[in-house]
Length: 497
Image 1 (cartoon, rainbow, N blue to C red):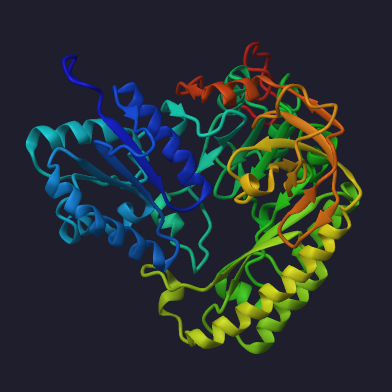
Image 2: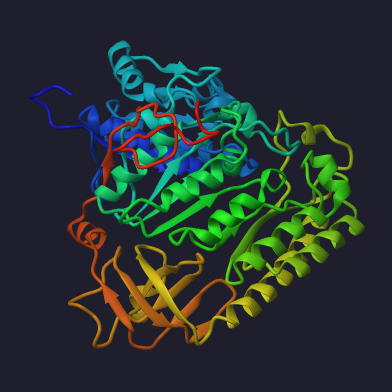
């Protein structure tokens, strides 16, 4: 940025998973360090960055369609820069600028730290810059991040994936699993708490396989327990674990650590053992259900969610019925259900038995109907209970017309509540903590229409009210073990790197 010009305004548009959302926070942090400023609502930005997903077929259509709509803006304003990063960029590479020559920069999942340099180079050379690395250049945690929320943050424990699921393109685009040092993770969590953050979600493609790089299969449970020692950290969540790597010590750590929420997202994908084998998912339905039984024995109040794919190549009606049977037995509080989408470059894309769209749709509809009924039944059990909510922003689409606010219970359920009553201290803000009683249940949310039972104003709420979001510097401590980062004792046995 030159001193005699106004700062260039940026806008980041994120498609895809939590990993992409967190990467976008890193992109924002870098751009702000380079002198860019966030574009204000309604204003035209000088830079638009797309952080893309490649997991589903409509991701391609969505990106290229959006890029097409931007072509007139680029013609009208040649100084506008457009950058495309993320998984689709890693997959399509130079094809992006062939299909959309008005794109200025293409960068991959392994070099998100290159964006400011590539933008400057494209501007100087007046030509598109495409840089796709085959392996990780800089661990994302070493980069600055402008967080999206004042009260809840993502913290990566690893990147990449060592599994070979036949339907998934992620390992090809994100690479092999790389684990962060425990001290680095805890230092980042402490830095966020110091900025007022109340909740962190530990993030990894297979978060519970954390420790594979330093040969400690119990590392993730130790990490959860270590998070329990951080003063001011009220809630800890994690996503997503893999059933094959899930161990009893993680369940024990969840049950024994007060700030670890009794919420578990456990991807099933299919209830058919035959289909699981074809997917190369290294567990079977009985093992999956045994994990759920163990979780509920330790934490009867646990809310368990899942992912399910319908219509995998070769799936028979018998296979699909097995999925319905497992869903009925598992009693998930909710499920993310997907119709199988062929992804070029994955083994499943060339498998025999690709199912007609109408067959997949009919099965999908039956699964959604069953899960909605279960979710509603499970939510009805919460009616009349007192719940603690971390007040959220933007989670209730009808809050303005219903005069409600929304928040997440400790088990992850979404609750729309009425912010009234004698216990309200001035006004309830996102980031505050309230308690209320659930009065109504729907399949995908709860309602609490009585007066609040308590209201605690927080620093996170102060920051939200002031429009402040935490910004963290990259953490590169390289510490060898678990424990409070400020004081480093000898490494915990089994965690030395």
